[in-house]
Image (cartoon, rainbow, N blue to C red; front, side, top):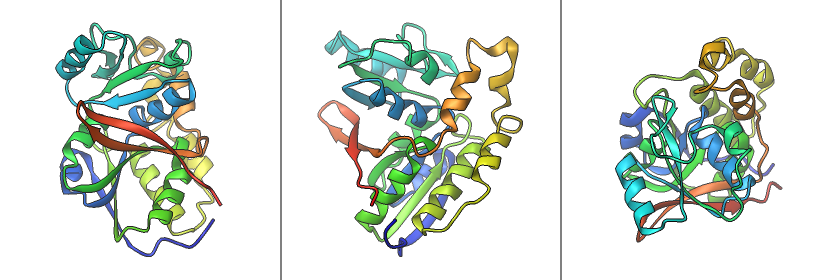
Length: 239
């Protein structure tokens, strides 16, 4: 597992927290933005580009007509988009080699507001061990864990739990009750995924996909290029 992280670990909350984040910053959105993005790469996507505004997504597609648009507002797929924010729906799409623009009401807003970060990663349970291993290898002085919450303005228990898990991983400390606490989210935090009248927006399979932990041996490092942000898939040695 390597040596425990010896720098400062700070936990922030929602959009205001993203603005305060410094050092190597992890923007956490478990349900569903930053669980979806690693899945998109696992489904064969060539590139994922997080964006803050729906209008920017459409402008990007006007330049690059082959791009797919994915995202939500209020949980619902944005009008005119190809995909929503659902990993179970994305699993059914042919994403091999596709470029995807992704905008959401919480996760991607954290990215565009984290102007003070030295380095940006997306965060969720599905690649948490890879995130912790990457941070320990980079050994920054400060790590900021930003829990984006619901729409970036209300706390979300799944994001808070993910931050606690990442902190334990960084410190090489056990988290023996993780499975029980993840399962409990279906009753407190993820209950909207079990509403039979809301399955079009929040399908139950999304919940189970998003609470799986440590599936992927890579991080998504958010970089800037001439067109904006891009989430780069970076393999991580887990030794």
